[in-house]
Amino acid sequence: MAQTSIEWTDATWNPTTGCDKISAGCKFCYAEVMSSRLQAMGVEKYKDAFEVRMHPDALNLPYTWRSPKTVFVNSMSDLFHAEIPLAFIKQVFDVMNDNPQHVFQVLTKRSDLLLEYSSELRWGHNIWMGVSVENQKVMHRIDHLRRTAARVKFLSCEPLIGPLPKMNLTGIDWVIVGGESGHKARPMKEDWVLDILDQCQAADVKFFFKQWGGRNKKKAGRHLLDQTWDDMPLRTEM
Image 1 (cartoon, rainbow, N blue to C red):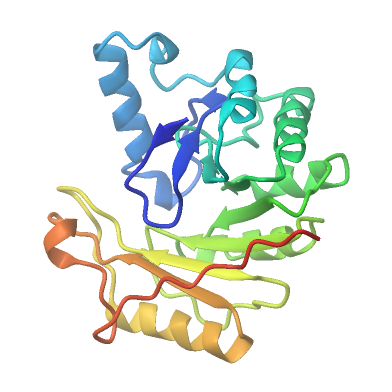
Image 2: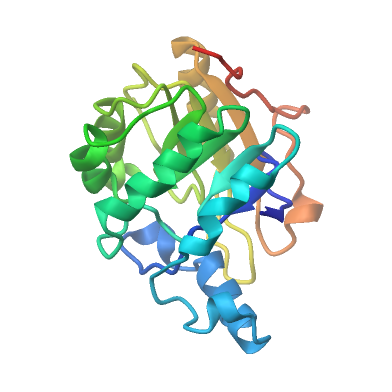
């Protein structure tokens, strides 16, 4: 487990690392850059940089955490990458189900495999499943997510690089919105964000505004309409 500055979680856990680009949101992938840095620093886990790798030794970590946590699973990878066998994904799910005191947030861009595997997986109340939706071209991921058996379903609209009008938020519990950050960050328009906020409020979906992003994300801040938006689903014991 690693502490993190990500606003909507407490920590990260990476039983797999590595990925490759499949849509426009991947263009300036933070995890790819960080993997190269960690490789250069000699960190053993990242000796192969951003090649897809499984780390069975990491599966034991959640059993050692003493207090309940909200944990982002695979911040440095995509659990539903085609190179990760279903058998290993099942092992990760077994660990999450064995530790109901923690909330595990899983996020993927590979919603087709997520849907294909969904019936093979055990969806405990503490496993929150999300898909990345950065522009209209990938809005089909929402439909894939909706058809899974996940108890809590969420969207990560980050980096938001285009408008997302008229989303079908039926069955969606939470939406995170954030702008891209870094020297080459693509701009996010306020109108796009406000439209998503309106859609969430109309559908009674929790809304979390992460950041405006840009070259200096700290300076740009995370206020929208002069306030912060930090709504999240409630932890359940169902």
